[in-house]
Length: 495
Image (cartoon, rainbow, N blue to C red; front, side, top):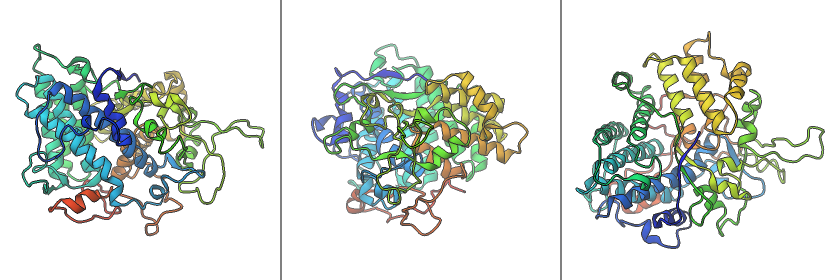
């Protein structure tokens, strides 16, 4: 699916992408506000792209990597070592200092500045509310309880209290509603236009984003608060809500600092294009079992001299870097920004919500009896969108659905139907939405073929259920609630 608005090197705010990766250079563009709980002021039209770029940095780099390891798309290379602790499930509090800082200081604080600014247009303020909702949902899905009511206000001199996840989700729905209401008021004075690097100020697309985000959020809590989810989804559909049919994504280019954030880090002098990310047997074997042609779109082939099969997708078990020394393993492709040796990786978009995900969310809501819609058509649209996004065709998708064992949805019981919808969503998110795939696994228990990493340091059979609070909170927030183990499920998790 197409993405929108490739970055322009002429816009100084885009240096944020380099800064948040390398932590050097023109730091002022990232640190528009030094204290995330004591906002200053700045021009709204300059702050919006900073917010969007910050969200892209988190979703496209740190959360993408950790999510893709936990979702078992990727595992640690046998030739490098950067993500051994991730594969071992042994990340520490300090592992999350940077994404937490970007979430609060660069994304949420600047969203709030836009919202508080009396000169901000209805379009930029509406978008800021939606980005605030999106970011808080990501934060609470990752960490559990997070600062909300006292955050971004300076209410406790840098020590905001932590609010329960349920309250954070209530706020997500509230922010979405406020954002949509503002976007429904035309802003003719000074529209945001191309400074919005996701939809170029297109209110219709942003409202579709809002509706899709709200559907995602209601389904996320449906196992914990079924009544609220049912009522919320019913109201959403009664409003004749339109949902995303294109990716909500940030596009990048190869001009200094404007690259895909994962590639930007891998190609930095610190890492020197070392290849840490390789194909996990978990995802590859499951896709091979469905004869999925997207496999070669997500992973590069490895030349083989010892078989007659020619080039192949080579993989190792999750956490198998110790037991497979010196084995050449397939890399994530440039399409997903995962190969630092290929400059085309710089161009891979970061997807906040994909068109494919939008259709699968609608299919699940219909399958659960929470919304109207033809499940088969929505499911097919989800697979189609994924195939087209990789450069394949809807004909390829139709052939796949007809043959793949995990794509049969007719004549099956509801539980199997849900399982196959989520499993196909998992395949579609390979390499692009790793955090969301892992989050959906935590919510639903699907797909069922995920295993425990071979180098896990957790008790037998356990896998991570959340990220750890950052060390910066441990040492500086007087209301820090204490370390919550990574194996503790978040509030909405029922599987």
